[in-house]
Amino acid sequence: MADPIQVLVVDDSAFMRRALSAMLVAHADIAVVATARNGDEAVNKAFALRPDVVTMDVEMPGVDGLEAVRRIVARAHIPIIMVSALTKEGAETTFRALELGAVDFIAKPHSAYANIDDVAQDLVAKVRGCARRAHPRVAPSAVPASRVTLAEAAYKGLGAASYECVAIGASTGGPVALAQILPALPHGFPATVLVVQHMPAGFTRALAARLNGLSQIPVREGSDGMRLDPGAVTVAPAGKQLVLRRDGADVTFHVRTDGESLHVPSVDALAGEVAATYGAASIGVILTGMGQDGAAGLRRIKERGGYVVGQDEATSVVYGMPRAAALAGLVDRVAPLSEIPEILCGLCRT
Image (tube, rainbow, N blue to C red; front, side, top):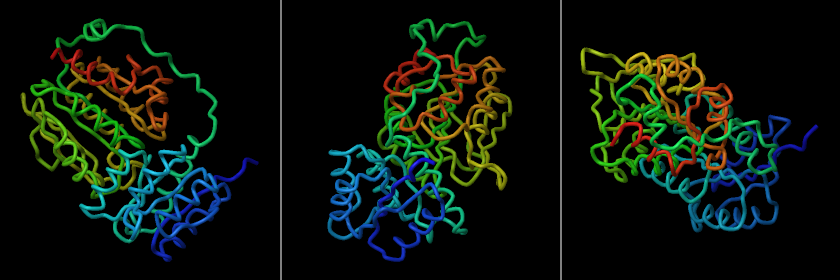
């Protein structure tokens, strides 16, 4: 049996340290090797113990979570999962922590989850997924990156004179990836852009606002009945599944409740709706994230004659979702994160 994943739990609340620890040690493959009450303790114990994963409180007296992340990331490749309060300030601080090198986050139980089991499931899944980056990995039999030039990719003859909609799906590492892609799209970008990012309810509005402040094209959180315009980005709200409706040339964004799907919103639902609405004028982009969400929906884009871009392993925080799509033969172009904006501009002929 493999050694358990070693976790350092950091929080200034004794109750929260006990609660998070209990969620983790309930699983035989996870061990809490230590806890810390503040950023100074977190940094010292992280360097001394070299855990596989750190869970980090955002707001602590003295050295806060941001500074602790900065210090740990500067000296050690230890995955850090932020534990964030569901407030505007908490969300903004969490996104800054991700930009500093934290790999993911969960929302604090009392503020974002009605059921404590949801917290535990989310936390355990992310600890397991992120811990894989703390150990040497066996290289998967990934599809090699295409050598096709940008011009050839843009005019590959997939049946559409131009592309009208870009569907982007992401999970772990997604907020930072989106902050590199969307601000690089120029003013006047001709396609509608739709984004699904796995995150707790309440955080997608703050994500959209942050991306809007960085980007040349408008970014907003989707709301029921919103019209989708070319050259604008719509982020699907967490906790709802999206639906698209076409009336002639107009397409509107709608939401529905979904108590059955693993991810709400899901990349599968996004890609499936885009395929049904835009057909061969669809582009799917699958970014860093755990699991296989997106593969089924991207298959529908391919079946309708659309084009799919997948982030490569080297630039993915977790090479799960892009790998699943690539191994299923659904990806036309595998590319590093830095090249994706240029590819999208080429495909949309800007």
